[in-house]
Each structure stands twice: as C-alpha cells, then as structure tokens.
Image 1 (tube, rainbow, N blue to C red):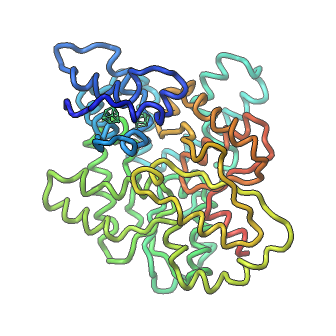
Image 2: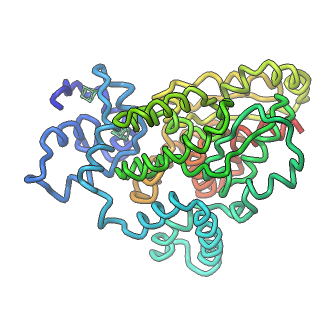
Amino acid sequence: MNQCAKCGACTSVCPVYQVTGRESLTARGKQHLLDRLSASKRSSAYPDILSKCLLCGACNDACPRSLDTPGLVIAARHRLRWFENRHFAKKLISKKALLYPGLVSRFIKTAARINEIFTKNLPADSGLRLRLSEFTGQWPASVTSERYTTARSKIWPTQDKPALSYFTGCTADYLFPEIGSATEMLLQKGCGSSLDIPESQSCCGLAAQATGDLNLAKKLAKTNIAAFESNSLPVFTSCASCYSHLMTYPDLLKNDSDWQHRAIRFAGRLQEFSTHFVNSIEFQARCKDIFNGSGPVKRRVVYHDPCHLRFGLKIIEPPRRLLTRFSGIELLELPHGPQCCGHGGLFSLVHPGLSHKIRDRLMANFKSLKVDTVVTTCSGCLLQWHQGLAAEKSTAKAIHLGVFLAKMLR
Ligand code: SF4
Ligand code: SF4
C-alpha cells in the first residue's frame, strides 16, 4: 500500500471510468480505498466499489509504478467476502457450475429455452424481461447442441499418437462446441497433430478467482495440473481467458511449494492459440494455397483483442499476422484502437448496466467500419459480441478465430 503516486495515468484507460466518470472506480480510487480499508471501518460502499472492476489490466499496463490493482482487488474481495450474501443466485449458479461443469450445459439449455419464451411473449421494454435476461440473455441459441467432448469420437473415431494435450475450457466444450471441433480440425489437418483430452480437467478457475474465492480457484488449479500430468505434451487451449488464467497457476499456488513446482511445469507447457498457428511450419506449408486463393471477394474483418492477452501477456501481433496471410481478408482496426468489450466474466452478470454501456461504446466505434466479421479467441468476449451485434441488429458476425480459420481451410 501507499505506493500509488496519484499520477492518474490509470484513469483514462479504465473502461469503468470511461462510462461512469467516477474517480472512485479508477485504479487510483481503488488504491486510495484499499489503503484505508480495515475491518473496523467497513462500509457497504467498499464491496460495491470493489465489485465495479473488470480485472482487465488496463490500469496495470499504464501505471508507471506497475501497481497490480486487479490483483489487489481480488485479494480484497477475498478478504471482504464481497460476493457473500450479494447476488446470491448468480453466485450459486457460477460456483456450482465451476465445480460441476456438466451443470453449465443443463443451465444453459434451460436458459436458452426461457430466453426464447421471453422473446416471444414479453415486450422488449418489460422490466421482468430485462432482469431475467441478465441470466438467460447471455446464451445464444446455438448453445443447445451436443457437448464437444461427447461428440468428438464421432468426428474423429480413430486417434493417432497425440502430439498435443487440449485444455478445452467450459465454453468450447459446453457452450460453443464448434470451437472445439474447429480447433481439433485445424490441428489435425493443418498441423498434423492429434489431440489428447484429459477427462478429469475442470474449469480453469478464473471466475472463482474473480469473485475472491481463492480456495476454490486453487482447488480447480490443482485438479487441472493433475489432469495433465499423465504425459508431458504441450498443452493447447483455444480460449484466451483460460490461457491467461492457466499461466497464473504458479503465482496462485506460490504458498504451496510442491504444487507451485508442478504449476510451473504445467505453465511451461501452455500454448496460446494464435501463437501456435503462426509459428507452426506445418500449418504455414499446408495453408499456402489457401492463403493465396480466397478469390476476389474481400472479407472485412476486425480482430478483437481480449484484455487478458492485450495487457498482461502482450499477445497482439500473432492473430493479426495469421489473418493478414489470407489474401482475401482486409483486416481493419477500430478508429480509437482496441477496446474492452465490457464482459469481464461475472462482471457482466453482476453489473449488466455498466457492462452494456462499455459494450455500447465499442459498438459505436465498430459501426463506422462496416465490417462483416469480428474474430476473437476469448469465449467471454465472443458472448458479449454476440449480444452487442444482436442489440444493434447488425448483420456482422462474431466468430472464434479457430472457427473462422477452419471455414477457410475446408
Ligand atoms: S482492472 Fe480495468 S476495470 Fe479494474 S480498475 Fe483497472 S482499468 Fe479499471
Ligand atoms: S497509474 Fe499507478 S501510480 Fe498512477 S494513479 Fe494509477 S495506480 Fe497510482
């Protein structure tokens, strides 16, 4: 504490400040609050302020003192148990879903059905519809298809000796199984790599950590580390948020030396999606004709940077390098540069109004480009884009980079 120079470099970059103008919600404001936080001076305003953070890392990136405000917010949420007794239903759903990912599938299917009923029967401005859509509106209709890890044996009945292990993440497995299928297809056909998918893997734990439930986050981390220890293959994942969180396991488990060593070995095996393909000589060789053969029809594409890759890990160029190899793609940039989409995992559930405002700023900039496709590698961003484009009645499509590349490869 007391390290903040109060310089304000973190202010203008904070997506929450951009839509609220409230100094208390910036990293500087939160640092100030955390400096004075104590059990004896507890106020109901504290959890509210601490909950209004996307953990995007923009402040950390801009801070001349490299202060880790998102890390401090997570620690404070843990100490304050900020999620306890608040937003109980959302907490219950998210926590149970983390422990038992199968529940995600059932919940989503029910939510998608309820959503359909709202759309038909309730007026667009109905308060009930708006409140309930905080749960149900998250899920597009396509989520009702079969789980990816269940379906894959029908798509790839025989497997060669695996070259990579695949951490699917909940989204590619349960929510958008086409991401899992496309990833496997790209790796099989593009790189000649078969996949091993350990069955005992679980949710990465990012959402648990974001709520301050560090015990659950550690439990999930240990489950995943153990699940991938049956071999020493590189571990591939198609979700940017999962990847960035899996990379933090050594830090998460730093107080447990045995697990920390295992976490370091695990993190050293991780492969980020776009970096893997851009560096794969096999993929470049097999796709040479496709890169040059898209014909005269140009597709206007924007790549959306997930905050976790843009700030913490600085993975900005690889997806762009991959996309610009296709002669039929015109890659465009947003007028004011990359922007947060406002999803922030559970942030969009807890603060849907703020989340929509941040998303709407992004949509306003996006509209001026007249783009037909948005690609990204983060499952949360993808959900937010689906909702944003639907709200704007845009004809543009949001699609995972893997699904987009697989379509080009077919
Ligand atoms: S992590 Fe993002 S939302 Fe939170 S204070 Fe920093 S810039 Fe603002
Ligand atoms: S950029 Fe860093 S030092 Fe400057 S006000 Fe923000 S948190 Fe404090």
